[in-house]
Each structure stands twice: as structure tokens, then as C-alpha cells.
Image 1 (cartoon, rainbow, N blue to C red):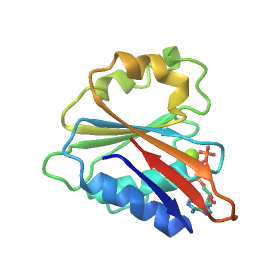
Image 2 (image 1 turned 180 degrees about the vertical axis):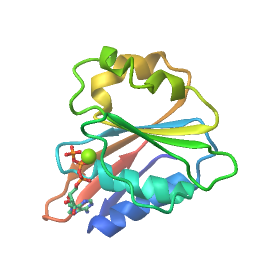
Image 3 (image 1 turned 30 degrees about the horizontal axis):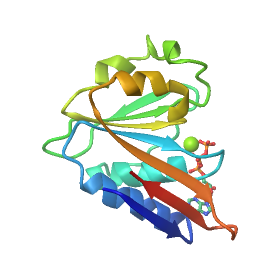
Image 4 (image 1 turned 90 degrees about the vertical axis):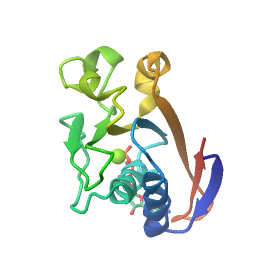
Length: 146
Ligand SMILES: Nc1ncnc2c1ncn2[C@@H]1O[C@H](COP(=O)(O)OP(=O)(O)OP(=O)(O)O)[C@@H](O)[C@H]1O
Ligand SMILES: [Mg+2]
């Protein structure tokens, strides 16, 4: 899916994520780019909902990765990774990241994906890039999916 959308509030961004998540079949890795407060976590919450996860997800800033079990026949795991505190992809060893990357029964969402670009480039997974930028107005965001 390639598209650009402008959202007017948090709920709209969540919905764009939800729509994308609902289209997934398993094996997708979502690489999220955007500054602090752009809306990467909001978008990821939408992804989780689209995959069928009904409970609340919270940002894995300190633990780096959280894994959820969505109610979805094809997708066993939804792994949410936050690389804000990651210096290089070596920090991902030991948190279980490599246990999930490349799996058909798993969808991953990676915030601050630019920090682990090397690992993503080497991976054979389908990478979906999501770039979120601030719009002109306070609650406006520009989301580019490619
Ligand atoms: N159109 C919008 N879409 C998403 N979030 C919005 C929008 N307008 C305002 N916001 C606000 O922007 C913030 C986005 O926060 P969020 O935690 O998703 O950002 P983030 O990109 O994950 O930041 P971080 O880099 O700190 O992880 C929230 O406070 C949200 O309410
Ligand atoms: Mg975040």
C-alpha cells in the first residue's frame, strides 16, 4: 500500500494505523519514522487494533520491546519495538528481537526504525515504511505509507 494522508487529530491517525493493520496477513514489519510526539505510538495502537488486539498497549520505551497476542487466526504475535533508547542494532540482541523478525506469524512495529536500519535492510521481511510529519496546524499530521 502506497499512500499519503493528512490527519486532523489523534483519532484519525489511530484509524489510519487500524486500517493498515487490518490489511496485514502476517510477516509485515512496520518501520516508523518521525520526531518526538509525531504520533508513532498512536499509529502503532491503531495497528494493534486492526490486527485484532483489544486491550490497551503502552509504549515500550524502557523495555524496548513488548509482544502481544492479537485475536487473529494468522497472526500469533504483534511485537512493538521502540528504538528511541537504542544506540545501534546490537542493543537488540538479548531482548528477543531476532526471535520475532522474519516470522510469518508475527507483525512487528518499530519506532525510531532509522536506528536499526542495517538490520531491517538485511531482513527478508516485507518492510512497510510509515513516515509521520507535523502538519501546519497543531493537531495535523502528514502520514506517508510506502
Ligand atoms: N493528528 C494527530 N495524530 C497523532 N497524534 C496527534 C495528532 N494531533 C495531536 N497528536 C498528539 O501528539 C502526540 C503523539 O504522541 P505519540 O506518543 O504517538 O508520539 P511518538 O511519535 O510515539 O513519540 P515518541 O518519539 O516520544 O515515541 C499525542 O499526545 C497526541 O495526542
Ligand atoms: Mg512513541
